[in-house]
Image 1 (cartoon, rainbow, N blue to C red):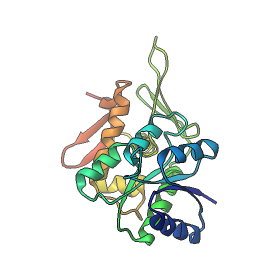
Image 2 (cartoon, rainbow, N blue to C red; image 1 turned 60 degrees about the vertical axis):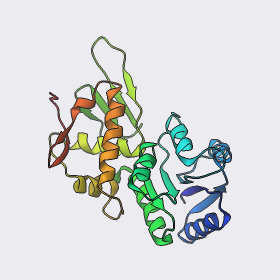
Image 3 (cartoon, rainbow, N blue to C red; image 1 turned 120 degrees about the vertical axis):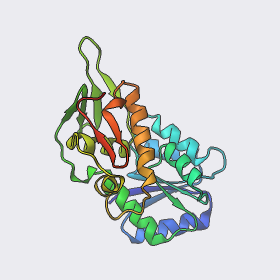
Length: 235
């Protein structure tokens, strides 16, 4: 039974979320702020984190960045929950490392759908367990590790969040093919998810930034007017 940690300082909202998740078959734990949540995560890592943006002390955005900087916790799926609904705020939440974003007031049914979708996505949507290689990059779905190997150089590991990992896995499974934003949403996020196409651009940006540390970002190409692809021969 998947375990969900809800980090929300408003008791009524936390109770609403907990009741609906419990009725849907999830095990739910609650924390009021980031420091308490981190202590709980260290003791027993949840399968997914629902995190409020505005909390006393450390904000949800700050906490997300902290989790993504941790080698142990960087792959933890995070659903950001907040009253901020402007596009710029959504982008900021996703840029911080969140995998999805729900604005208050929210529909409990939509929230449950997004939680289930995130958990499905964290299982790689059936992309398989084959080790994939493009250029100097090797992606191992079993160990959830991306390694860059070059002659006469030490191997370099690329740290990716769960969504960026699935995105790269899908690209490497389908090299040289151009994928539209809507196609990527269907194949990487799942066709039952309420996510805007603009979200794809945010995660592509994050994927490129991570690959840039190993000088592999040119392998992800933008095809103007069509979408994105991974190439075996970057220009």
